[in-house]
Image 1 (tube, helix red, strand yellow):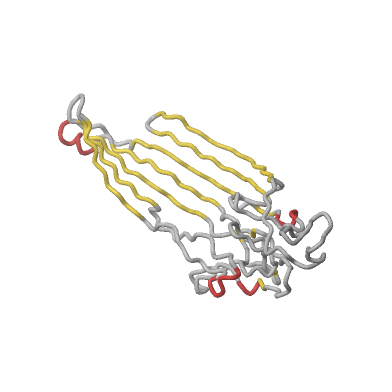
Image 2 (cartoon, rainbow, N blue to C red):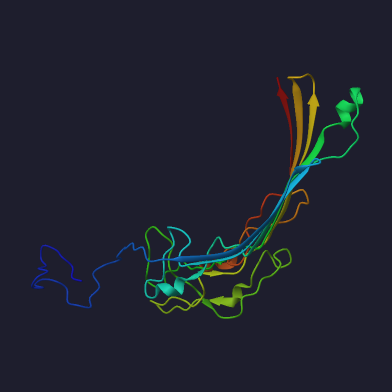
Length: 268
């Protein structure tokens, strides 16, 4: 491809740079060439409301592959197939259990009934394996700079990937020494685009409910909600950018700790 300017004739080549002389700082192109594949086993168990109890349990065992998990994902332009890896949103196992239970306490009348009757418990418990970790580098050793989207650069995976407990290893979730970067210009490392897997999710949210009936049309609803009631420490994915130096491999964010909120609603 020749460079066109007032002094360059693209038909004859007069005044144009000779072949092999770089004249473009970068060339940006968009192509719809990525693809994805998702396979799953989904099972659910449901108990409809009866005798004050209902619940639903849903389990998914799945696997998702793609070459780019978002519009900003750039494929390896030399060999797009090398960008194929686990989707960033892949969750191998996911179990969700939700329920509503009217507590089986005796029914009372009068003031005692106002206090004792009508208590219920509801909640959602979620267990999920971690999302894949996006591994990348922004040093542009591959000389494929993008002005807008992420770079296709990858470090080299030089040792087996192994996870660690960040609470005992200076916030490191995986060993950064498993990766290295070759300074050879124009080369993309051999690390996969994503690697399995980041920290898991284990969360239980519970609500305690009570209705105080005042009259036929008036009532007060009380609600106490507990999010992450067991206060499990849950980490977001670690830093997967090799260019971040000492932060590479470290967990920098955690999900919310135990939170509680109270609410009253008056209906009239």
